[in-house]
Image (cartoon, rainbow, N blue to C red; front, side, top):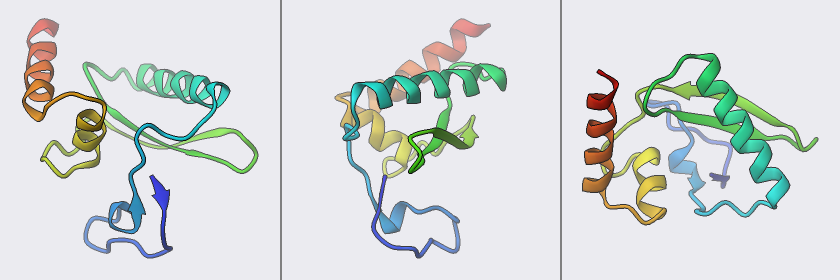
Length: 107
């Protein structure tokens, strides 16, 4: 997300309405590697299963900081998680099917 203003959505306390979602992120390979490693470490440290959305910030110092981990991110068609998945080339139906299959395979 690229921040467009300092205002936040008071009801949901998220910045989606005051930000622009840019997919893929405009980052170099080193930054992407650091973000992937940080996301995997947070996912593992919290014993997440199947999927989660790891919200991070790339600081001015070049370090990646985890803001929060959403083990059950929003799954409606306008949610950030869904937009990331569909902007990556998957359909909404593909995403739901994959999530259900992943959960069933855990059992």
